[in-house]
Amino acid sequence: MPTLTFTGSQHRLLLPDAVKDRVAPWIQTQSTTSYRTADQAPFRRMIDFWFAAIAWAVYYGLEPAAETAGRFFVNLGPNTNDIRNFEEWRADLLTILAVRDFGVDSPDVADTRKIIDLANRYAEVGAPVLLDHLEQSSDLALPRLYVVADILARLVTETTERSSDRSF
Image 1: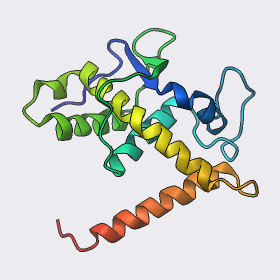
Image 2 (image 1 turned 135 degrees about the vertical axis):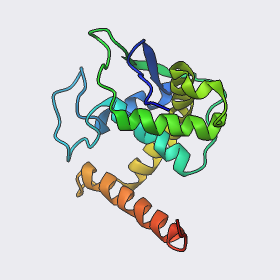
Image 3 (image 1 turned 120 degrees about the vertical axis):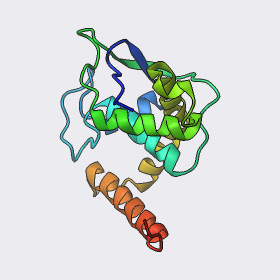
Image 4 (image 1 turned 90 degrees about the vertical axis):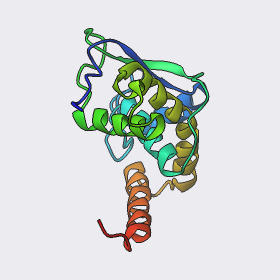
């Protein structure tokens, strides 16, 4: 199956309303604040946090929300105000997630609207849990980038240990 084009038409990316204020300090580029460095705000853009929230939900086995109730934060798409550069690796991973959840023979795995809806529903449940973990791990003496790096390093170690007895 070829990589799907997620920017050929508009897709709204959503995050829960409840996290809007909480996520802002973790994002570098905000329209209402001056630019922050990566050590102050480790997620470059809101879409990077959105994607991390999806990964967090999947890693911890959370079920996607039945429907999205989140707030629109950006469009993927062909227009000048849209994100037009949706990295191929993101598209591939979301497509793999869709195959896992919809089934390999489902026509939904080729429907970018259904895939983005699934991703938004995972972000809906993953964002608050990820933020809770980030905030609990924060330390005033430690830059936020190090908090995120430490959390990710622990996840990689846990995953490696869980999978070390597998052969491929």
